[in-house]
Image (tube, rainbow, N blue to C red; front, side, top):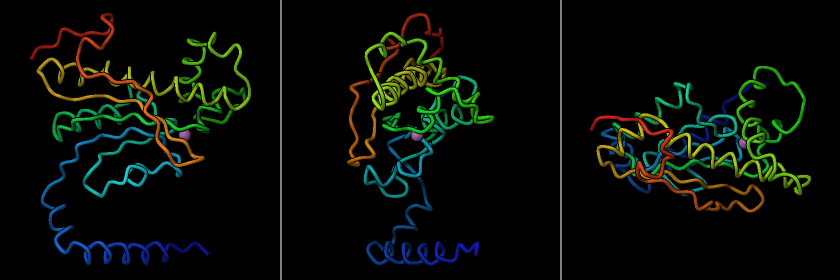
Length: 211
Ligand code: CO
């Protein structure tokens, strides 16, 4: 049986519950969305953005892909970032990785999985760049170390986009954060990565954008 009837049932119950608690909820959301946050996370079904940070519809703009990558030529992700910054005017961009990420784990193996090999090659690049950090790290810790390094690299990639550089140059107050989620206890950890001005970007990446 390929039924999705239960999803419609769940949906009706969900909408009813929200309307009972707040009769004007959907009416307000129709009028406008004004989220303060942009979330860039992994597609993994165990890391649902809204739920783990306790936010309602309308409160967080979300982009997810395998292994939460921000690639310079990915117009999907770049469009999301530009829309979030330029139109929604979010104040915070959160890059969220997670320990035990299957995409990151796959990048540490030599199995060929299909088209995703090319996507995950970006993570292999990060491993090669930081290879010396893995010298005394074994087992599952190798995956988790690469999960953290991946978040740091993706935070840097967000900062390197022309969108963020233009926003910072004109004085927009937008901060980029790197966090990681632990599937084992449901808790988010702040990796202490934070960028909020053009000088947080290495000079080699800075563009002479006009205000
Ligand atoms: Co993942």
